[in-house]
Image 1: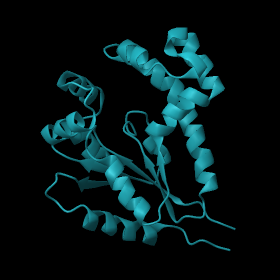
Image 2 (image 1 turned 90 degrees about the vertical axis):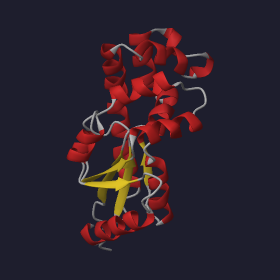
Image 3 (image 1 turned 45 degrees about the horizontal axis):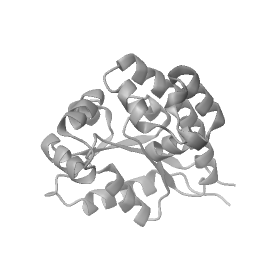
Length: 206
């Protein structure tokens, strides 16, 4: 018999370095669920979600073979809050169901990590035991994204930042904050939390 693992969220603004932090947790043997990547996968493979998106956004939302038309959807929701909420309202529940199944498959681990950019905005943080906020100055985050995503312009990044919670909101709502400003060492911060989570996790019973 296995106890339910501790569920830990990792969030942060665009360019904060969430994925890098999650890779460190993975190197410590902890499974990581990337909600944003799974959302993209579900939008391309989940029949219920595909039909819902086509119903509300039209067939232009997909190319041949149910390949998501990211450029079209991005243009639709870019400056339309109502459309953005509608799309998120379709995608987030399916991601939630997918995450629940993933948790069941990985319940032998003392704790599990869920990485998501909109953890607070979507309300899914309420289903987690603790949340880590990854923090970095906005100017540094913009620079990272411009290097990582050459197709993005500064105005695109500004729009994404504006659609997300502020750094202050995330810090206030999170249980922990990891500083990832390219000056503060990240590994000691992660190792400290790792030890805390292992101590908090329920004992696995055979």
